[in-house]
Length: 173
Image (cartoon, rainbow, N blue to C red; front, side, top):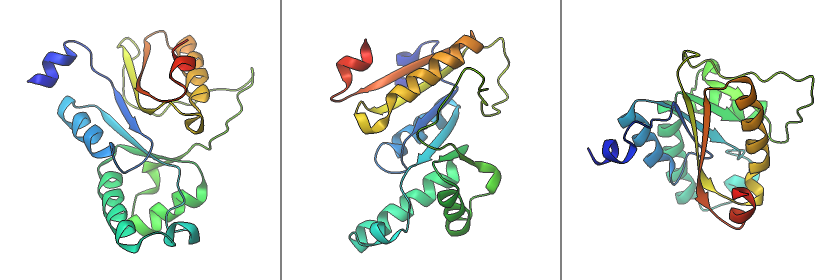
């Protein structure tokens, strides 16, 4: 009831999270309550030599969390084919649920933007929500530039950023 009062008539079509830890459980639960798609993202090479050098108990907890989040996600965005393959082989994620979109995409005037098939009708408002830290390593410039291009193509697209960080003032301009 509180969530519905807070949202009133606003409802995102997609909620995304940059990793399967921390806020992912809250955002996944929120997406289930309001009945919208949940897109989890993974930018870390799970099970790499560097990842495995960390605390084994901490890694086990993170693997269990990742397994749950990934299997309950509508789709999963990865940043490389290698990460997609590991998710498919280790977590048994179906390949059609994995979407590889590398960080550092270059978009030129002749590029086309491929949007995930969501089943959303063109006349409906499409709300896309980002919740996360406003830090340089999150590459929010790419998010903002892509949002601008998508909004030009789809007049019914709305983008909302929620977060804070060292890039807060610059991002809000």
